Length: 489
Image 1: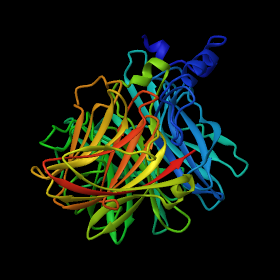
Image 2: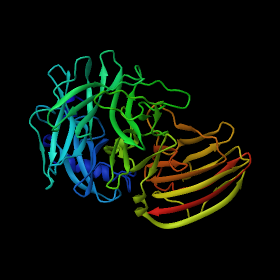
Image 3: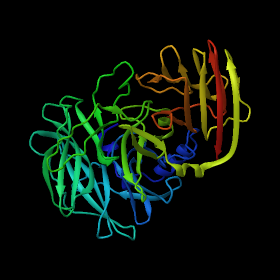
Image 4: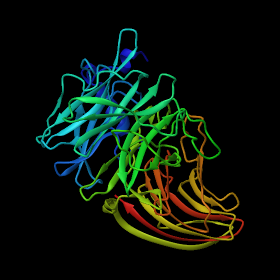
């Protein structure tokens, strides 16, 4: 595919092209029931996630013409409850002088003038295909109209940094506005840069955020700084980390640092170790906002760059994760599904079994769209867990291995295979005889919350339509399972 094909605008669509693509997408057997997904084409990073004018506003990166990364729009959805989302159509349309090749990722800030300010990276390429990034601004008024500003607010990266300079995340502190941006030093290492503004229009460079990670990947994308529980938290996506025994196994990583709150005027971050936000397969580019009652809410992209998915053949790719509430407890960052997700609950079923060296197929607990909470108690079994989305030849496995002390997510036989070399097994180190596993299963995904948010494992899965069974199993001994399921419409 040529660059001219990848970087077409919607106005360049041939007659009937988008309608034909929509028919292909709607016929896909893996369309989600309750996750945000694109109408056609490719969805990636969540952008501009904010509570404004009595609603949650959320934008996402969107390429309309198919499951490829090309010309990106900001697509806009709104919600009153973080569960039911209304389609508002295109938010930011690229194609201007400073976003000629896409409106890339960014954030939103509600200002005192009653308007919502949208900050994004304008992607441009010159005739030699050299990248020139601009940090741009658009403004949403209370009537819902979005106006792009004519000139960029930052027209180039500062000296010492490459053109990999993007993804502004803006916040208020001590009467000023600050922004962190992902960047790459000239020596091809990643970092975060800090800017400030008094009026949201004119921005000045303060400096690089000093961390202890001087050589930690070749680029840091999608930074997000906030304070929570008297701690400073920096989310970012370092690209190019080598895989370790049971960490950094995805093609690119998404994680966080926790430390002392920073002074953005003298940006130095005293922090602990880098930790992954999600221990599953498909998670990237998370962004947070504050709820009206002060909760810190996170949404991520349930996908990865440079990865091919089975839905590609149907003309679409990816979705967003469910919203998660972030909590700091004992200096650990917990992630819990927001309470509002209980609005999805319909029929309720329970099952309690003691299983010894067997696999028990459940009767009423099944389906392709549900929440399942299971308390697993190891009583001598070497291995015990849940098989879900099971069929004649398909199953996704979540089990505890008592010998290795790992919780394991295995999608080897989940259905249509992923076309990548990142493997089909993810492990989370856990030393426990009892654990709570909370699964949110959708038509082509699962999000697993472990021990009330201690860890999360997210995966896209692509089973057949009739692979809807659930089973409990053990090997080498006994375990007890106490489960509660709510089916969703």
